[in-house]
Image (cartoon, rainbow, N blue to C red):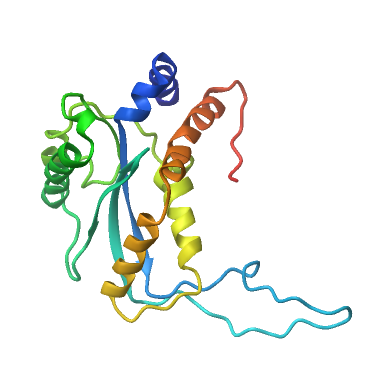
Length: 212
């Protein structure tokens, strides 16, 4: 089972896995994401009725961000140019860049094999991409609860961006970059460490997972 294999790797040497683990995934960032009802709640006096709010939706303007990160922070982000798609060849170029960026920003990994984690989109599984990967951690399909980008990184980013309006992709990219630069190493490390508990829940007899 995938989770059993990953948990075994972690327990064999937790510090080594945290040092070598790199994950990536893509997410759409909209020019405008409305606040949730909870976030936009007003303080009301006793007996006062809540004013009706106009229904708002995400904007059509958006940019696709491919984010590579580890327990120390973001290694690099690619913002897809308008009109392009992430093909197998395009994604393979990310892996070449990841190799270069890792050598520059993560010196201890220069002589170690990266434990790489990614989603299962066709581009990720393309022949061009797979040929560039040395050690790939398994990821079950339809399991966002086992993807740190989904349950941690993107979730917190989207919460931060809610209610903000941007006029261009460049403004979105600048704000996203500033957000990640302002985070501490502990934030990224916590997101990766949470995998241990999630792997355990997946392999526990009759265990069930409840999204936080």
